[in-house]
Length: 326
Image (cartoon, rainbow, N blue to C red; front, side, top):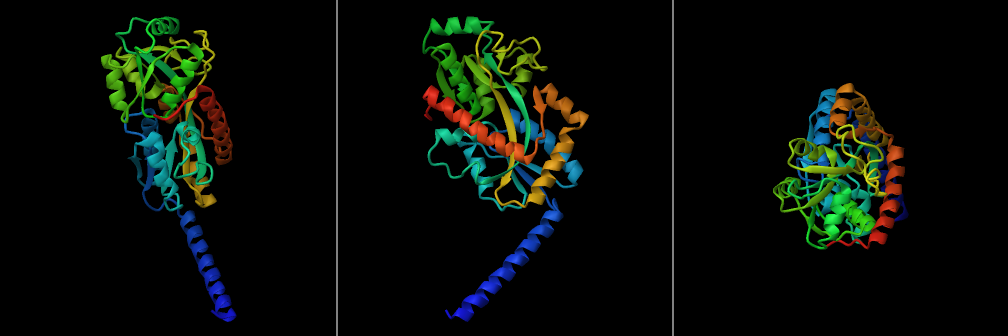
């Protein structure tokens, strides 16, 4: 190819790039002009799924466009995350995720995506304290009684999670580290199955988020022994904190929203602004509170910083517990 050809090709590519940039800017200005898909990388019925559906309904009313919740469970949330990482960066495919988004970096060496480089943080939706549950058939009514009961029967009891590397898995491993109990991990792919197994007594205990477990706790099908937040939950005011029970344990489950890396900043800001407005309404605040979740709506920059901090924090916990994916 001659020099002139290279120059002309370069000019053509520059013009094409400018045209594409202009089209992207126009598309961002009109956002949303069609349905928005929000991927929840876990099965339906869980805490994150419940919250996203509440927000999706309100956003759809505000945007005058459908907000479709798409559950893509599997691999500790990695399947859904990979879909969004590879999606067109136009704001029409978004990801919601839990702390496992930050934890999986330490647990898996060959992730198909980088949670920092491949995503554009939008906002921290909110956070919920974890709750330590036992099956009602287990003869314990306090954390102290549970510890004594488990130590008298090492390796006899099992605990549930919604998959290797998820918040429930890591939180229980931390609890084991702090208390010295020996209980066996049983991961489930679907949250409803874990709930059923606990209520039936086939699983002894579980650390999970308050929203998904609250109806079953209120119905007496699960027994709550303690919450993992720094203070008592408004949804479970009679349940003590781990600190009150004498365990130096504090862990919350936080929920972030992300777009693919390269999504126009104007689009990210529009999504963030829409969610911030929705999260500030008394209706959503009340519904979140009833589920034991504190709404946030922090800036994209705050979520970016928080994600990096959480990655470092859980890397240290994984190292200390010696936790490995099964």
